[in-house]
Length: 582
Image 1 (cartoon, rainbow, N blue to C red):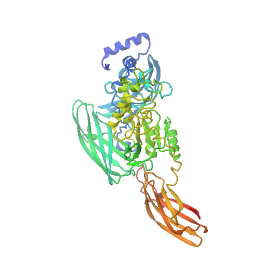
Image 2: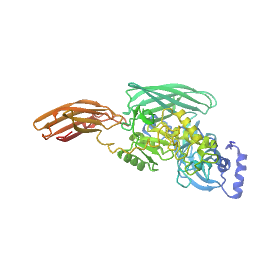
Image 3: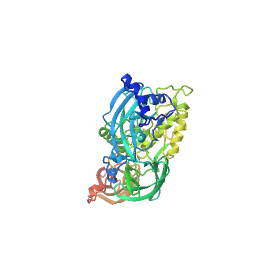
């Protein structure tokens, strides 16, 4: 039952406040209203809780969106006061509504709350969310007052959903962050990108979901601008959307990108998409985010990136709360030869996904489901994974995992759970994920040979490649058909290398030289035969000079300064002593 106490109902407010005044204690009506829901497996949310979506940032100007400057439509919440209430812990703070927010919606966004929690605004219960991990949003507009407002989060003790969170270490009640957002009454709800790779051209289906909070239809103009990795505009368009009252409508753009620069772990090219929302010509909000053009998949249990097989060299990782330390750790893992990060049991902080996008690290994102300390049996009263009462809870956590990171190109595999046996809830979860992202592989380490996983338990954890990050071309000289041959091997799995070679060889009085250009496909080897017979008695050497064109990966605006040859090519010199015997 949904209970909403309106601020202007003075009599009812007085009745609620009277017992607390008489007792000299602070009432927590949030625990009274939503506490019983926290004890129910099937109750995933109530009140003003909104559907999960990508954590986009609304901005007032295009420059703010593109540069990541602080937005006037976002108020980070700080200076929380903590107190203990019956059934949980309450966190309270204040914020001031800006005058520029008139006739706009006001939302609360939370991140990584330690348990199921309820929300109150100005003392009135506003919503409940069973899943604390990841992001959750609440529409606070009906309760907002001019000037200052009070918001509180009540984190419940011993919530029923704790049986799904066995992977967490015991920690005090709390949360990572919370903020207040403002968006127009017809707002950008979410964005979904679906690329289709072709010969020389990529077509991206860009679906922009528009949510109306109005009781009457309204027209607004939605536009986009696509910037390539060099910061140059390559496509733009605009459409008029006639929103339906209190409804979510979707507008689709089909973006054609000629000669796309694909994203992968070797060349993590990032495009930027800028979205604008205008009402009668006035900019009401804009958002920008980086994304990569790529297509993950699998065939016969082998992971594919853009149609080509890739060995996933993964390690489990829980992101550091300190972004600087976390990014430095990810950079070290990349240097050590890992190309895949297995999120450790729950959605990670926002900076983690952005860093993996830029570094070229694949991510296996994980839902916050771990029932490893629950009974192993899957009969009645056993593990929650086979209990239909928990189905809504499982699907809600999977949806929040997916929507929270679906715009990040680094997220190429989904893990619906960890160490949670198997059963009805995970079967249905697999089907739900396949409905949302049909081609993206699903990896469940507890499937135990059953059908609800696309990759084996060992598919993501190959040993790191110590050659990763070193010279892209491996050089070897060996006898071949009675002559010496220089073999060039492209160590990169997906990236074709353009190179120029110069070879000088001598054995005794014999001389041979070769030079030329070639395109060396990823993970391929090309032999270059020398006019130099193998003479075991003759000593000499082979000198190989390579100029390999560097894959250019730029995430900032284009640099117009002339580029030196050294900036464009990676040069290496190798000398091999002769003779080499077969």
